[in-house]
Length: 64
Image 1: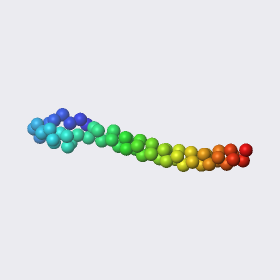
Image 2 (image 1 turned 135 degrees about the vertical axis):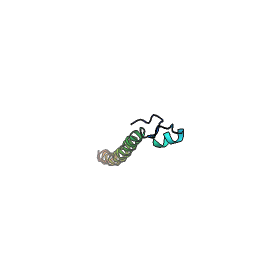
Image 3 (image 1 turned 30 degrees about the vertical axis):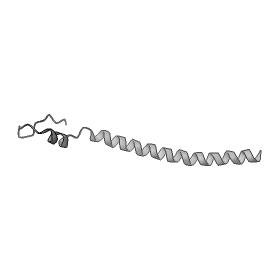
Image 4 (image 1 turned 45 degrees about the vertical axis):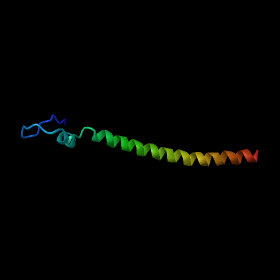
């Protein structure tokens, strides 16, 4: 729910109180953190697999 700058008692809120009560960006930040964690996990997995594939091809090349 978007905060319009008025508190429940009908009085105008200060800019700092509006920023404190604003929650619209929280979901976006959570999604960004999740996407970052997924990306870091994918990078780690790809690096591990890449190392194994590289050693596999080196073994094949040396046997030729």
